[in-house]
Image 1 (cartoon, rainbow, N blue to C red):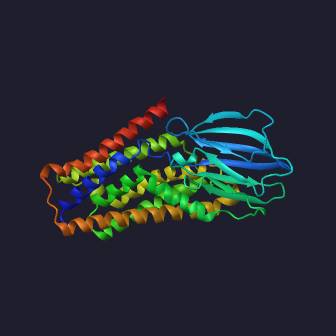
Image 2 (image 1 turned 180 degrees about the vertical axis):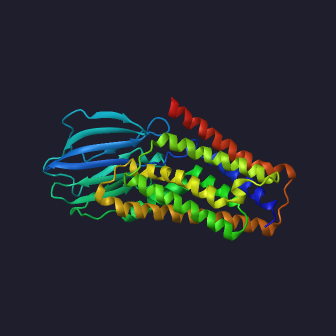
Image 3 (image 1 turned 45 degrees about the horizontal axis):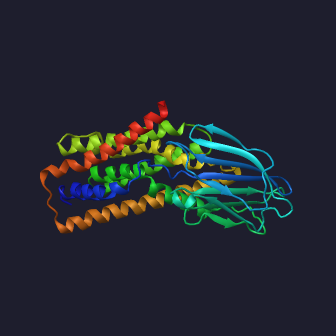
Length: 335
């Protein structure tokens, strides 16, 4: 590929995508609704809404009409989330065969994990999405973990995580040669898989807000590296792309882990949930890389010849957007 065509392709793609890019790159963090049966028909409720970047979204659980709330629920603000605890009484009818939904979910880009633990030891796990904001609880509960749901959660998370995609896009842009690119992407994948596993399993705990700020800063670093390369300077990423990809991959893994760690996955569900989610992230990442490389190949055949001043547009576009995210997230960390 001609060196001039690639920056032009990236600049066009970014400029077209910017109007649709959300100011908060991680509003897709999932919510969690847990229902634990204390006695026949009576459930302890945990409702957790993410609030990593500003006020939580206006979504609320919708339980069957025959369920009542005997006491006023308590609300606690925790780092990165708002948690409400309470009790609901659903009488002899219970929840089996009943519909549970999330009001307001349709106008968001987030998912909600619903887990019902029955007194007889059985459980139901379901992931609700904006397109499917409700479900009917099976008449016969089961112990099956929704592996497909966690897989889709991973795919949705990476494809809606504009900051993570910008980082990968920057690596694709700055690294020349298929073998070097493969090493860099593999290093990024291995690194974020390590920290994703450690954080989800509880071995490492990192506050989400500082992690998100540092993720944005990693993109700023890449933008600076791109400008140095365009000026003929031997940037670190160009010389040792796998080192940079691995180092920042560890950081981005903590960002991915925020999705699983904040929804309070039961210990027994963690192995399958972690595996399914990570595979989903990788599939989404591969799909994005494939699309980007296809775009580069298509523009190479067109032999696009941009003006010289366009060379710096992509780097400054990426850097400006990432800098905005960094300042926004620092305001949350120190606010």
